Length: 542
Image (cartoon, rainbow, N blue to C red):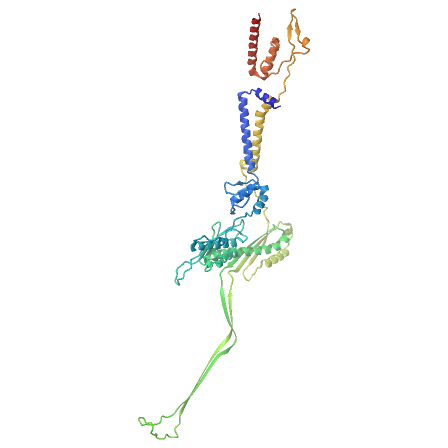
């Protein structure tokens, strides 16, 4: 069969235009197949790890190759892509080999043997790197943080009493997970974690920033109170609004239905911090300290003669003379009261006033039939749920209005040539069109030539003229007429016999002209040559 196919291929003689069309169609089909295969090859591949995860690429590629898992490297981000249906298998293979996302090295660096002759400076750097790695691992333990890096600025110790060395400092950069953020408590925890791990590190010298370059530790810096106040006001106000709206929604939801009310809460806060000390005196005063002094003194008359000898008796004094006596008394008492001393630290905010506005949809079925009494009861319920204090100046407004039906949000209409579905169908249609063009203009003519049924030429009896001038059919001798060969011929074997009549040859040429026009001249030439050879042979025989 293969030999017959080869013979048919070699017997085909295509015109120049037909060959060109077949070549163009073949090239277009091959190009379409290549484009389609490349397009299909990019579908269904997902990232093995995240874009920011640090992985040992060489080890991962080696394991994937050993497990016969196809993979690709994203030229834009450098990520390793694997087929979606092989993602679980690839991760299990990597986990079995112990290949995971690389984390900063901690005290493992200290386990390495020191090289002979390494200096103290090298040891200090290794210790610093290990401490930074340990702190980074501790910070990455938080759920909101995917990656962290710590830089420590540690001053060298000095034995001098007076030393102007700078203070220790630290910087922390964190990469947050998608959709996550750090609140004030978490930022403070990171700051105190780092400052508590380094001796002599003040929390005010620890800076924390995120992947977007935003300074997260600004609210904890003493030199930036405005930023702290602004963040605190925003956070406290948001929490207070959410809490009050939640309480009001619990009341209105079952009564009027979800979507038939709107609540707006506007609190006014005072974020000033107040430290207050109170001292009170209780009851009557009591003696806490008493001091009494009493002195008695008597003055006697002077005896003796000035300038006289002292061993000589003096004149006797008059017994009737009286001596002067002085008495001095002094008392000192200290009184004290019972005191009550209180030190009160007010929080960083105080709710000065709150305004609540509520709108009900009057077209709602549950609200349409309400009377004034029911509305007043609802107003009282909402007033208590929101915690309205009239003495503080709070206000609550409840109104019933018609809601406007929200208009449907129209998606941004893309031009038709940018529509992904149209692009996908256009790709498939283009590939199908190229295939059809190749089949119709390339393969179809070729198949027709290969599978064309042989056209049977009607059997024409070769008439011979006898000596009496009457034509005789060869059918009488051979039993069947002489059939004309197929239009396609190979040499002289397929030509009618030279003894055939002129009509037979003309009919053969007509059939040949319908199928293979370019061979008519060749057949005529073949007949002329055959006739010349036959004439030459006849002359030689004579």
